Image (tube, rainbow over all chains, first blue to last red):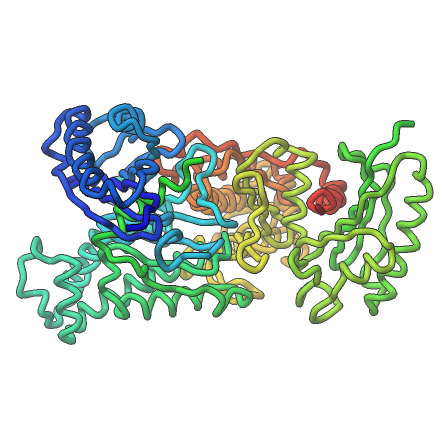
Length: 320
Length: 320
């Protein structure tokens, strides 16, 4: 077997942490996972990761040399190498994860937040290969983003650029459950936001809907999608509205950095054309003439399950 | 006298074209102007510029060597060297001004739009010296912008990034007189937008105001400022509202590129604290916690009359 450069991608999530051994061209040779919440202490977590990942490396010792370890994590700061006050992780305060992992593995290690890692992964292995200017929007429980300008990820002054989910798209609109900001993109276009829209639309109308068969707490964006496919009008309206708000926000982003493409990623993308069509329509409607028809809007080409590991693995190539 | 590198800055405006001979450290040795509208034909315009600018160069022949010519113009495209369909200039279509000027002067020549030139000037000679990440907002007849990310101006895919004046800040808000877009920053925070706000506020209230002494067509942002300084309530409300809208928009921009500073420029900045205070207040109010108190908001340190020439002159240093 030909020897290749390998990298380890670790995606730290609130519940699970996934990791994989990845070839230079984006093939995951083997992957595994541990439960993040099983480790109250970060050192025990790193110890467990080390055990598991070492096995992967041994299993594929004849495939190539491991160049380094990339970690994607919520509130992961590229500049400091620390996870900083992540609300969705149980380790509180500042967690110097790069130092801990590099010491334990004796390998170069680099950290980024999960949305920026996703953009790097898309640039190295996915739809954004070869693009210099693009914006990746992750539509999941929250709305994250990673922005490329002139071939590089935008970090901003302190490494925390690209919080597009928290930009306001509806003045004085829906209050965000955690930030308290009003009318932000995340308040409407995250999975959580879509469920809130469903509740509002069901409350404000008396018309029939398949969604009324379910207790409120069982309504998820997946269920809304299923009902929409069965022709349910309210379910369809929910995606039409979500796409409209997303499209309006994307138009603003285009007029900021004039990207070649905007790539949508995350669980919500499984809504497909139900989301894509209104998003494209309202993005185009809100653009200056000079931008109309110029920006490709597309879904990520990466497998959702693999993408987080690939994004983290792509980080390794930012090590100099 | 010590020899220095000189550059020529030419600012093409709808009415006047200003030009100057500028030292490497931003001193304008001499400047002049011609009336843009006097030249129906672009060749005649370039011919007149050549005559006038040649005199300047002769007058200061012992000061240094001219490195090149920078031109700032509305709709000036850095990549193509052409002024493209500028609505405020009487030359229609595509004007290959870089080629015409370079041929006539036999000097390297570079073009950019006026807002990007202003940002380059601020970076080389003004408040943004040494900053890697900043946003310059030009508040004049329109609202323009120039964005620096990681030490470089953001051009985007086709050179037309940074149209922040056309981002929507009020969903379904005031229709822009020329683009037709609803609720854009320019519709509220340009000099034109401020006058529209004044007309709306005067129409919607019956309370006394100094502004009521003037015929509607005589109300300018300068007059509103003068009335505000005299304690006029409506005039003060106009700036409070303008600052609020501007501050909300700036918060969105901060969450995109996380700049160290935002620099306000253009005629409207003469409103000083009347504009700055509400702008700062509403920018901070709309930021995620991680950005609060992190962004310097300031006025340009360059003299308004000189800045356009300096911005154009700074362009010369982007020539390789």
